[in-house]
Image 1 (tube, each protein chain N blue to C red):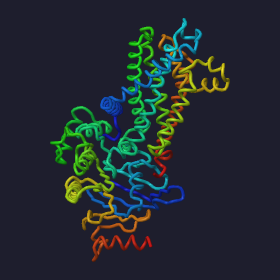
Image 2 (tube, helix red, strand yellow):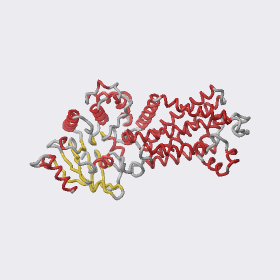
Image 3 (spheres, rainbow over the protein chains, first blue to last red):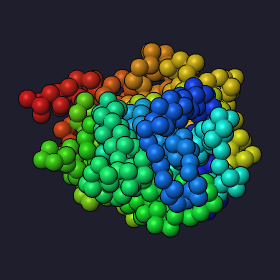
Image 4 (cartoon, one colour):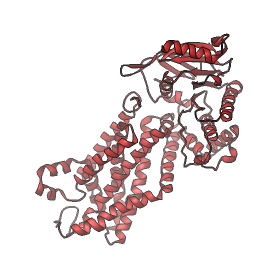
Length: 269
Length: 239
């Protein structure tokens, strides 16, 4: 065997990590079901109830009045990506406790690449789930322009990577599985509710300027807006920029956290 | 030297886990790293496998410095961890192929190596069995087969017989001794059980982060049993 692994070996490892994640997902098909039920309950129950209470004006990217169900579809795609990003990092904490993370981290490849491979694997599963949700939503008559379903792919990937990187960074700071449930509650719910997933910014501003400002800087809002615009064939450049910046920051935090010279692996336990 | 540890020091805050530890193991040598619980064996293994890094001291694997050339060093190393690291939902073959891929080995070469690894450890008939369905002894064999799949120069085993019955334990000890003798593999075997060490083995005794003895097991034990020697060495120091 040569001293350093060729570039092909990097791709081999990446593909094996993605396939392993896909295989695990296939084995836990109930996960797909629960991943779909959650947003569908929001779409079919919550949105139906709030439809009358929440009037929406015409705001980009919409060119006409829309129903509340249509408004929250991108937010619910984001919700799937958010839950899944956290769930993949939960499995990382589990992997670490069970030891398989050790096996991964002793592979003769750069650690950032191994973490990136984990991230890609988790994002691939998230994107499949988001598409499954869009398909079910379409069955209930909530449809987007046909080209939106294609153009939304890069938006889902970028948002999935950004939220996955957030989960990865969090997993490097959490020592035990039990602590992770708390982190999820403190991350998932504020991320989701303090965003544009359920209400547009102007609606939020009516009740509180502060809440509006928090929503505006929440990276999750930008992921949702990126998806929303992409579903209508448009690019929200500001959201794209913020999402990429957040991905870079969360990714750097994850690499820092998993650095053998510091971060979680250094701490005894 | 295939494995060289020089002046290795590591601390968790104010608590020193390893204190200027130095030893080296030559090609084809079976070196037992004997120490009671809390001696620093696991910290040493975490440093050897780069789960931790330290600026205090130096580790060299097959001529590669772990700090300057970590990937080359890791590529020459096979590891059997203390806790099992198998994916229980994957079959024996899938576990081996997953590991092969992490080492950059794919396709027909991965299949060939996986089959050879299973033959070597007599688990070929279980290729399609899920790791979850294997007993403790077979799981360990699979982990050993996996650790050897990429032809490492150095094999590290961290208390590999934990949880095994007497027969499986004896078989594993014999097999790894055989690997060192016949294939020139350098072995570092961490344990706290003296009956896993043979008189002609190289022995390093670690206690409270320091090396108490380094030589062949027979020489260190002298007229007494290794068990007695070990207890008197570590007992006296602990008192």
